[in-house]
Image (cartoon, rainbow, N blue to C red; front, side, top):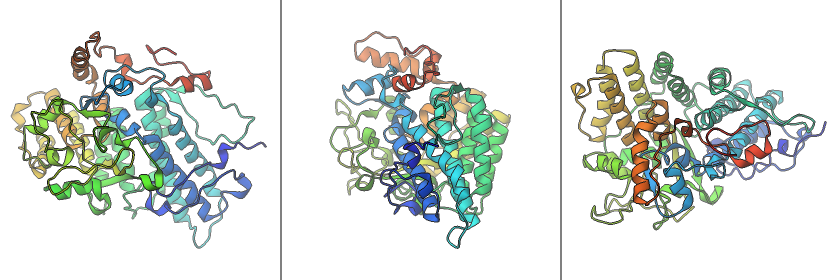
Length: 486
């Protein structure tokens, strides 16, 4: 059987693969299966490759996929890419439309799922260790497919590694619903049965991370009862994750030292000295090089409550409000100096600890689910106001929100402030069917400022991303998402 070069896991350097226990693995290059997947170290290195894949997948895309098309950011200069993204002018050549790294990560997970069980047990490779490695692979495969269906809708599915050149590499698209029900949720269920239940490593797919992702998936599926159950299971974990930060220092700790706070559930560490330059600096780097700036609408909401610690922790509050243009550095993931001014790295030199899931995120999803399942809104505002009070914001008054839609918007508004720049806002708008309502007038306003035709954002088909030209060329079974061109 001819084996693919890809099978060999040309994995690159894993010096900091996002999971601290996998940091010291050596790169693998051009190894045949007969010489790999044999030892405990092979399993550890193979899992490190999956985490390395998450880093490569979210490099830059963390912002482009999760925030840049929303009302969180506007274009930060004259660059064609950021203007196109913020004005919904996507096409098959847009960089973030490329899903290559996402599928490379899925492929690495498939290899681990197939071959890790074949490695003989030993004193250093017990059944518990093997199962925890498999939990990482199943959980991250689900995470990657969850990104895929939210961005492109129907996508190709492959659950076995592509190892034989005689195999047909082409695959048609499967519906998003079928992937949710037959891949993502089963993978998460499998991961939870396998994961080490005492694992609390913030850099790994722990029981808490699996339950957080499961809650997010159920909310996307609009299965609110199950979202409530999975979020309750997370709340009930023996290692108590919770919201607690009521001062600037503790709130910043979520992003500077996530391992030191119970607010963080799952984070990704990118260290440019080990992982190389990256695109995470799109929202904050040395000088005025950011590609995206905070949009004035959300900026004014932050500014309306100057006691909110999230305001001080999120962006550079030392910039005079009279400055034109208002170039405000997003400093959420970086330390501050003695004047509370963010100290961002030089361009592409990030040592960033990016949030994948944290407790406030899941509690606010729970509040959203409670609003959908009960006429009693008190529990919704209990969650929202607990977070607001801790952060120093004025509590909301329930009677100011008379309808279910009003309550949902209150929760979404809180998520926007709490989770700003953490890759959540766009998916929140899509999940709650509010993209056109929020973004059409905003895109028209931005187009007006640029003196271009005010076409707005009124075509719901454009909520999905286009499939990249490269993917369409490589896989002739694919068809472009309408109304994008090939």
